[in-house]
Length: 435
Image (cartoon, rainbow, N blue to C red; front, side, top):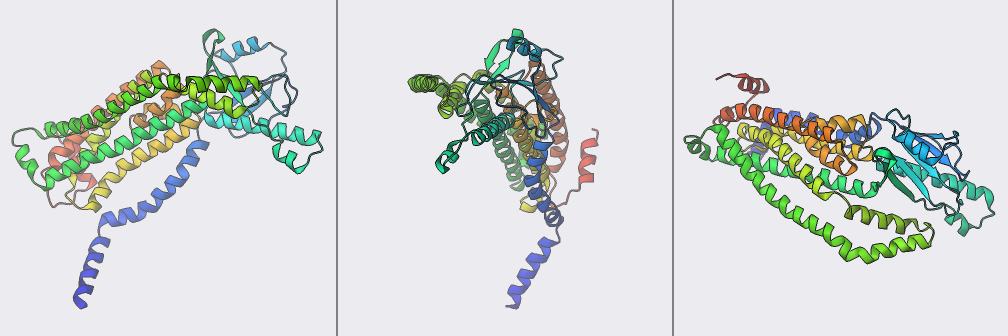
């Protein structure tokens, strides 16, 4: 029993005294708190406010209630809709969107249009639907003597048709639901790919180091060549998977109109026959049509570019981490924790900007190389200006070159170092060391 106790105490004391244990003990709670709090903070601090001009020909809306970042202003100018749409598209416009409510009833409001200069977020769309539904419900309560059954059905279903105004105020369908769904898929797919393939690079470097195979390999190739070869080889595995998925995605887009064409037409006809009252049917039809009409070619090549750039950036850093550690899991966690946190923060930012894609946070997160591989693919379905996309790619290339230079400096020294605890100050000396 005494011997068992000695083993228990040794294992406990040895691991508790490690710096990695102390570091994870302090950072662990902060990490979980960050997971819960950061999405809320990013959603609230989006850096943008949206002012919506309301044209109410039904005389039902009145003054709609504002909320944080979304403000309504009732139009009293008497201008025509064409003039108001032209004013909205003007560069000096005070408004971000134009909400049009035609003459309709509070029981079944229909024909509601929402015009904007750029794709609005799902949060804005949902809030507008909510305040209109609240207003219609209030009117119905005031105008009727209702039974309990009627009371349950007085809140109408609100269906808003979104339009994005382009040059000469030409209207284009803006399917927010389809764009939001695709944005989440693109963002999370990139996030998962960076974590999985980055970890594969790190584990591969660790295996070669612990088995001493690397000592034989660097006798014939330079350490930097070894690192780059491993990164490209594992990246090719990822590209193979994404190529197969891309072919399947294009196939689904081509097959969707053929397989569901009759159903889409039937749902649109049903919505038209009901005068737009069947909001769920109309919304579903538009969402499916929006997915089928998405520019998947552009989305796929942008995803490919940012996956490659993000992979090379993070994989080089993960390779550097793999060269620093042997086979102790605690060391792996300590050195890889900052990289994992950067990727997690990026997906939190992407989740926030998907809800409000036109904010300053969305712009800067799509430019900074550490976050752009996840944020930019998530923004593409909402439409991104060409200059912003080009700037983001250029910054990502610079970020990859910088990370490769830093990782190469660390890798060539750390890959042959065994049994020594490496401090952050020593890493800095490796990076700054000149041949």
